[in-house]
Length: 422
Image (cartoon, rainbow, N blue to C red; front, side, top):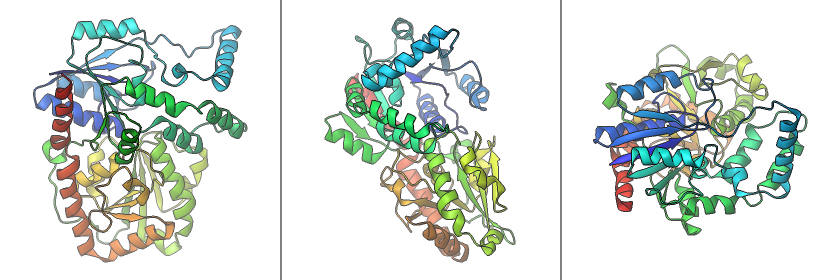
């Protein structure tokens, strides 16, 4: 079977952001099972937005996966006053009279999409994320279209306004305009999804909501490549270091809304509860590409925190951490980093909000889930003292991964969905 995958400005890669890790697990497993994959990348800039893109392209080439760069027809350049006026008028119109294309517009020429399809002759079109659904909203006579969704647009944009967007003095005003412009966004989103033949939703609570709205949808967790398949030796004995501080890792791209939401919660809710004694016991490592926004500057000035940035060998971070800390307090999508941590047998302490998208999480069975800031510190202290609990969580995390998140388990189920449409 030949699958044509549409991605916006990134590429599959095991050590990139959550989306790259997930799509790498999919394409890697498809190639391992003798399917053909071609990637169409669109809406990309000329610069290397992600520091690992070159390595990703090299890895894809080595696996025989071709990448087609589709040319953008929309330009972000403002060469004249007319361009600025046109952009302002479009923005103003989008607030008063929003249209489908304001949210799911196609950044590339539809003829170019159809030419690529005609040239490649795929059996299945695979769209990753809601952003890609706009490419096919107005197209007809295409192969079966499957959309793979993690975040729903209205929820994501609301979270982005709170944690990520617009740091200007007019932030509240701009956010109010954006919220008003999005008053019909849920309706547009459902219309775009219904144009697809089927939706694979990777967050359980979103799948239930879409099904209640009549969308043909199935829930499958995010697939993750088993590190054992890549030559990593995992041990059930924990890696707690003797005599040093306890390494607690927060892993995720600093451009990601979920990561930023977790860092805001950590900085504003958990960090103020740390005592001087705690700073001698715990060592928090913030790992991921991008820079901390000014609002989180306090994290760079605390002696208990190490802002590491992008690391090329993320596997060693999972293997060496004592606790994988995921404080994301919002029910946004599926936490890929938890599934990755489970693959390495990490001891995971996470906010219970993440259970909405991952019903496989069981507190004090394969992780510890907390709802209040003080509960996180209590969990750290308990894990510091209780070796048997750490061992139990580590072993059960690995077992949960093999049962639910391993690409060798999830991707064949995705392939069955593809086959049902052919």
